[in-house]
Amino acid sequence: MRAITVGKFGGPEVLQVSEAARPVPGPGEVLVRVLAAGVGPWDAYLRGGGWTGALPYVPGGEFAGVVDGDSGDDAGFDDGTPVYGYPGLTGCYAQYVTCQAEQMAPIPAGLPVTDAAGVPINGLTAQQGLTDVLGISRSDQVLITAAAGGLGHFAVQIARVLGASVVATASPQHHEFVHHLGAAVVIDHTQPSWPDQVRDVTGGGARLVLTCAAPTLVGAARAAGDGATIATPVHADYPDAQRVSWRPYNGQPRGSQLIRMAPWFDDGLMSVTVEARYYYENAVQAHRRVEEGQIGRASCRERV
Image 1 (spheres, rainbow, N blue to C red):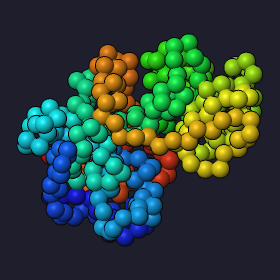
Image 2: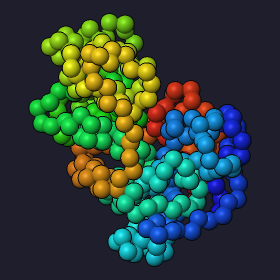
Image 3: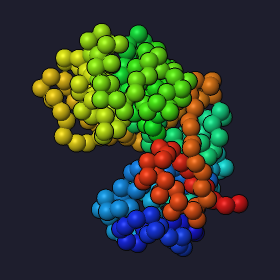
């Protein structure tokens, strides 16, 4: 099969179109013919030296495709079923990938395949931060920083579906977009005073916070009230830890939570904004744009 491989660490130019062995599903795994793969900052991090496994490897942590053959029969995935999932952090920039059945789900009818490829990692990470870590419920108010990004734009929508009121931060050019997603208040986090503005609109400081990007960690702590809980998938040194409770976490691949999101997509309560699409052989360009910070969500698909 064709695949994008990384044979040595470096810049986007190390991505190569190669021939690779077609994966064979093991116990509990389903073989999927990949139609599109999500592209995110994690891919660039691993390619640049963050990968600790053997070289060469196939990048890509999320996919959308169709079940190939009868490998999914035991889990109720028939041959040809459109599915998407998060098998790990590698393997998806290829014509075929294997995935544990519990780490994937049928693609909702309201979600195009190329859009679906950009959902699993950020969508699950947003949902888990809000529900599993912060325990968001109806009538809560939550601060979401970097709300226009790949993680943040899902978090705003999920918080609204759960009935919470959202105070968000974003650069000025993204304010209209974040309001459209459902944020009640959007504050310019390029201004040094943004934490003070958050404290003003939240009555003395946010109690529940999801911090989606490293540059907003310090501001999030300043914007939070005493005893606030701050969830973040960003692993770093956390400021003001004696006054607020930092709850770092990693998004986990759970098909059951993708299934929970399905009616939100079908009912139009949630959408994914894919800012750029590339054919597999143009993965170099996709990685360049991600590293330049121009996009938070992209997908690669096979040329047909």
